[in-house]
Image (cartoon, helix red, strand yellow):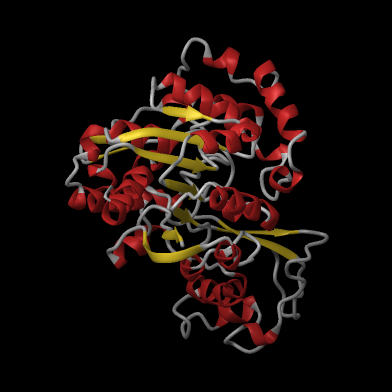
Length: 397
């Protein structure tokens, strides 16, 4: 870009990548920033060329331009940093789209896990005919899951984010592994093994293969054991509302011999379809996938001690949350564990993605908060660990 002594007012679009490079592209129309404003710079209305003339004062043209640009970029939540202060994983642009590891699938998976599978189509028809209060999507629209996500359902996608955001990197995984190892009196890191099946993203840390599926599940089991003693209870029955592909059922049934039955249900037909396949693939005789239109009768015939909702109510409409609260209260499900979406202080409240507080709704149906605590009790791990949340335990009064 040529510079002159005249005040230059370019239209531009800026992009910062984690390698520390700053890309400046002149565009005919760029609504993000339409002009440099004098008040943006600590140098008054100094132009870039003038900065060059004052390079001694500002320790060189490069530093002066970097300082000048950072003053602008910070207004847009970005800044230029030298690559030598970054770790290798920080130099890779943060992934915010679905991805998966294209490993070999079981023989029947590619043929079965397809959008045109007759069983999936039947479930979709049944769900469309069911109560619209619970099935009308807020987040999980038809476009929320891609065809390849059905086949590689354990990849980084709508079911489980694994590589997205500042707390989804190898350092965050390592911090979480060593924290969980320090509290692992049940030996879950040894008992629960991990693999790359169905597109799962894994890291090798402390001599073992780990994933978010595994680490989140272990953290959730220890929360439930601290407060409900699930590891030492016999005949324990669980309902997972919004069970996704069934990861927690797989882990809890594998880890806790006292689990008598673990029911998985979901208001999203494709989740019911995928979890049914996955739990059969894992050979879990105590785990059962219940279609949405059968859950009321199932709870009538089989009482449960605990309902779990992990990152699901936050993605629901208020009407859907009320539908579930009414159902759980009707069947006298005593305990309810919820992990909301969000970051920071938002996680200490029960909020939907668009900011609605749904705790008063749950209280209307008799549920009261017993306790809430961060996923990682150590505040440093909670700050830097793997995509941390808060756990809320409620009880039916």
